[in-house]
Image (tube, rainbow over all chains, first blue to last red; front, side, top):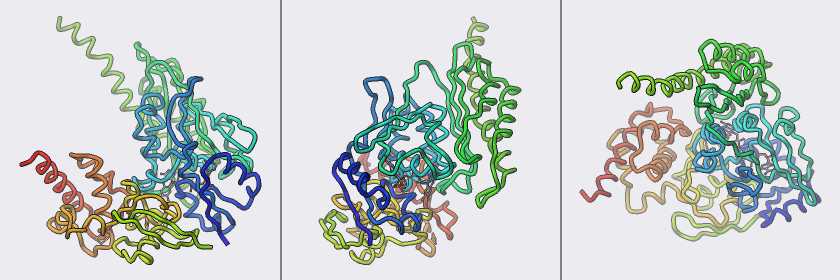
Length: 298
Length: 160
Ligand SMILES: Cc1cc2nc3c(=O)[nH]c(=O)nc-3n(C[C@H](O)[C@H](O)[C@H](O)COP(=O)(O)OP(=O)(O)OC[C@H]3O[C@@H](n4cnc5c(N)ncnc54)[C@H](O)[C@@H]3O)c2cc1C
Ligand code: FES
Ligand code: FES
């Protein structure tokens, strides 16, 4: 017999999880939980956290982090000016989750707790070096995103813990970023492969702080240090873009599964990185050009 | 164990007894008798069940009825209280309806686009209906119907 509970405070939810963690399931947007009959069947209590104000909101904390509440939806993130200013890459990734309908329901917390290797927010959060703020009855902790996932559908969360928010350190300077994914259909679950890219752009066109992360090509999303090294501290050239793409192909430890094959995924991540880097290459050259031209005219 | 839920349905307050695992699409069709909203895939992929929840387009097959408690739901019936809406008329004029199964969800998605953007681009329209499958029309006429309605509403707003 299933029970549905809507609790009015985080403290009550924590209390409930502490007492009944193993038989209860949290539900936020429900876009993962409600398409998994087996998860629903094993739950005796559904706890609705979609209306908890403590899990909502987007803002900057006193210690200089961007805080995004766990129950904030993908669409709210994609549309939010504060996110677009400080963590544009995350807005880019969330804007590509599912369809409008899914983005209006699906939450950031649900995407992380679900821990799919193909969760689209994850490569973006890896690049942004986010932390996942967890709360339990009498304790809280912040786990760096690269330590949060243990394997497909597995995280470091204990049965009595829940995600309160995601914290992203604010950055100075000008940053460029993109999120590219390949899937069967826009508006359909699960990327077959995805690439997130973040770098600081300097006046002399060099890129520093380069971060490259891949989704859906390993048991959890991964960073690709070799691809980052190929671009770090350099002016973007086609040669270097190709080297980074090759590094992504090498890093993809994908397996054949129901959604795609290993070979396709290795090709896809390399092509997706190029697909994002080529417009960036053009843009960076265009940024450099006008100055030269105006000098000539004078 | 059933629950009592209260919400606003197409502008009027309603009360239903629902099961904890019951989906909003079921409550709308079976308890409220509003069969305009269709059930297609039941897993969020086809958009046939789309309704507005607090003004936002959602798949009613993936919303628990209990989660709608205290909120505001608009269905296709709510858009056509005084006969066909302008968007529905444009669907008819453009030939954007064939078997019609996707149509209520498509109209809801189109309405959500028109509420979000006063002058939507073709790209914005296509993105707005990307979650809605149509196996008959080929989409082009649906896009034209939404675009036509955007133009008409813009005219009306500017008082011409
Ligand atoms: C048609 C369709 C298309 C989709 N497309 C994509 C896509 O393109 N990219 C993508 O990444 N995902 C996609 N998804 C998956 C899903 O929409 C996302 O993972 C979404 O972010 C899940 O959030 P939710 O709030 O709906 O999760 P829910 O279903 O509410 O919860 C999922 C799991 O997380 C747990 N949980 C939720 N919130 C918390 C919390 N705060 N703390 C601890 N545990 C929590 C729940 O107990 C549950 O086990 C798609 C799903 C569907 C049905
Ligand atoms: S029936 Fe809800 S999306 Fe298909
Ligand atoms: S008209 Fe038949 S599915 Fe769209």
